[in-house]
Amino acid sequence: MEEKTSFPYKTLIWALVAVIALFVFKEQLQHLLTNAEEFKVFGIEIKASKEQVNKLQDAIISYETKITDLTSQITTQENQIQSLYDVKIQLEKDLAKCPSLEKNTLLFNSQLNKIFENSDEIKTKSDKLKNVEILKRTK
View 1 (cartoon, rainbow, N blue to C red):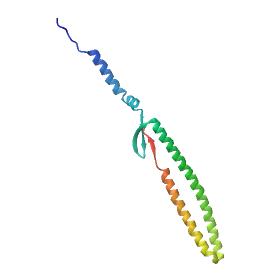
View 2: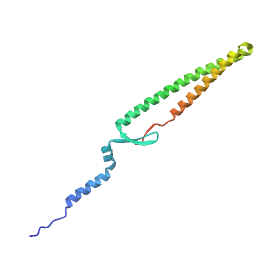
View 3: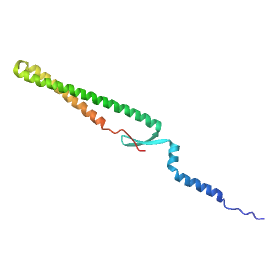
View 4: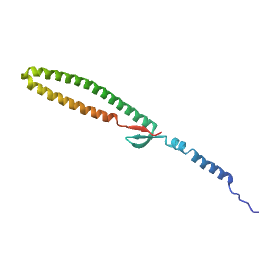
């Protein structure tokens, strides 16, 4: 008696269905397996878990809050410097009336100019920090 072996069509069909399902749900399976999220930090793409991304985002929000606080402090400082500048102009007018105070006024003027320069440097650094894009999620 000769046994007839048949081709395992049922097994082949299930394997084919599994391969098709893998291609159809490739992104979902990949996301499920890796549980990672893509994001950009300083323009570099990184994959990390959602928990790590959220921690990084919280740190960035804290950093942005510090920058905002620094900006408000700079605005306050600029207002105070403007007030000093107004006093300087008034003192220069008064100096014209009293030449004996010229040496002290020149010293005051040089120190005030240093304050102006330092303030401009701080403002420039703050503006650069505000314009840095740290985190960008790609999905």
